Image (cartoon, rainbow, N blue to C red; front, top):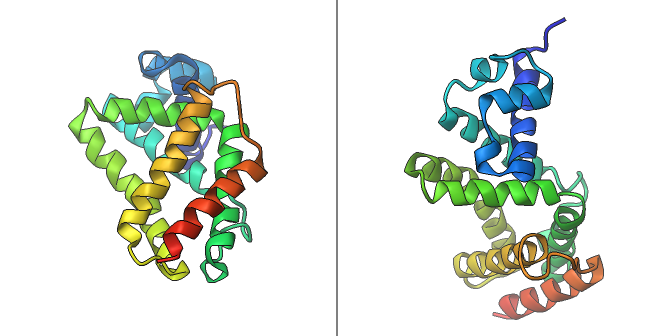
Length: 194
């Protein structure tokens, strides 16, 4: 029985993400996705005809998977202020560092490729804007006097930590959940003091 189109698209996208993390951008080809996913030759081309389409599929699926890092009921409650926000964000960051390293490495591959491909940059930025908007709404609800500036600062801190502990000079060290939570509580307390 053939795999249905939506399931095949998810399989292709998930395989592309895994290949990006394992082999880098040069290792991502339609043929490599077919082989790694166990699909008949040409299947990936039927889902994503061009390289751009394959990269967009990977970006879209990547965003879906990162958005699903927190289960229902684990998302931050802005009415709980800095502490609740820090708890939810720390859990997400820690899960990505421990269980989602493939997603992080693939994210860096896609981000770097977007610096070289304007058509991917626009798609990558539009996809990422969803999270930035959600974070701005959480910060606003938690009492941030300048949510736009605080989003940039918070994302820079989280992205910096994740990069350092995944691909940077701390790649062999992963801070514990409590350490990440403590850092975020301090950062958010300063922001929300207003």
